[in-house]
Image 1: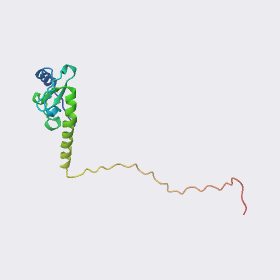
Image 2: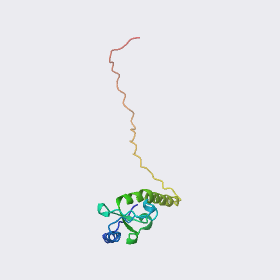
Image 3: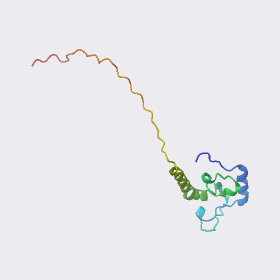
Image 4: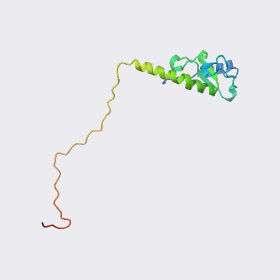
Length: 131
């Protein structure tokens, strides 16, 4: 997810004002019963969520920003955003027709000497044994 852009400070302030300092997570998109709002006090922590996944929308506007509590943001990221992002990547990879071949460089072999190894003279360690 390269080149991800976060919300600007103006958008974050507007989203926090719009929320009334209460979590804006609503419904099953955030793991809540249909139509129910989380309503946790954001004074204990606030995170700014791309309602429509940033990787798919590239939309950093106020309309796509939700001021939510950390628990709701964590749930949505794990159960909605991550699986959807993985699906998007898989679909884009399926569209590729060729595989990229990567050539791994190998270490050059050391040159072999052209001269034969010298023959060392025989040295008797224990003396000569007669048959």
